[in-house]
Length: 373
Image 1 (spheres, rainbow, N blue to C red):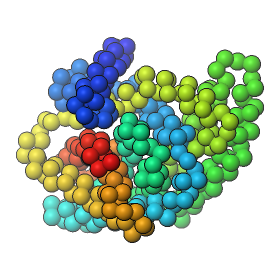
Image 2 (cartoon, rainbow, N blue to C red; image 1 turned 90 degrees about the vertical axis):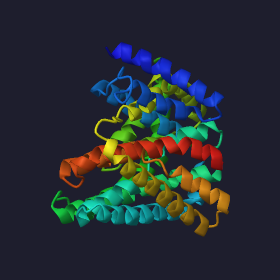
Image 3 (cartoon, helix red, strand yellow; image 1 turned 120 degrees about the vertical axis):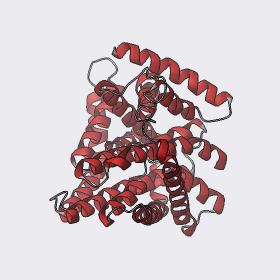
């Protein structure tokens, strides 16, 4: 059955991507849409499964690993002030907007705060692919978006831990959570600076086939595993691994050999898997709520992150582009929503609604980015 699923996924994503480009849109938009079409929402040819989820997770890790390989670390460091401002602005407004929306819906203060945190999350995997399609991944705006996404992920996780500690949904010590994040980045920087170059030189000398790309993947998955163990999203670890390898003489070979592996199977499965979460059953009476929350999610992130960019020296058009790049909530928000449902912070009747909102922000991002860039 897995082989049939892969056949349908690969064929449909290639055709949908081509059609999207012919219509003047980034190819990633068609690939996202086709997941909804062939998934449970419409045709029902493909249903989510453990095997699809695992292939999808590899896909998003490789996508962010490639983004790291293509990122200029000097430019990333040069824009760190803007990245922090963009991340903070992109958290404050969605958090406030989500809280007020929650209170208007009549839910408790705790659930309203969780709704705000859910809307504060950002996942730039779709943004990365869109910018890559447009040849803009190495622009100053793109570098700022990538840096802001890292800061956003850390801040949202810390705020979520604080909220859960106050509600009794978790007994984790806040100091420990913050200490973990600091330790992760200190260790990741050290490993990327000192250990990765040594490891690359040692492993590529082994008399085996494809030693360079195998070593790159070992480092990618190693960093992703380490980041998840430290309470940070695996995509952040994969991105940092890409940056580390980009500082070695093996960058070009790793990138050239990795792209066929990633884009031939794993990345298409990731795009489709997002659409597989969508179902329209029982949502007839919630269309207004879905559209309202989606509009809130888009506007608060666009203005909040855009304002952070504007205050740190970006011109208005660039600020809008950066704000647009932070709109997609993607897989990060899906994970937070599932956690909220499990811990009782998100009411079951709002779970599917929020999943649809997350998917819509992800679908909006590619054409919006193309327009503003």
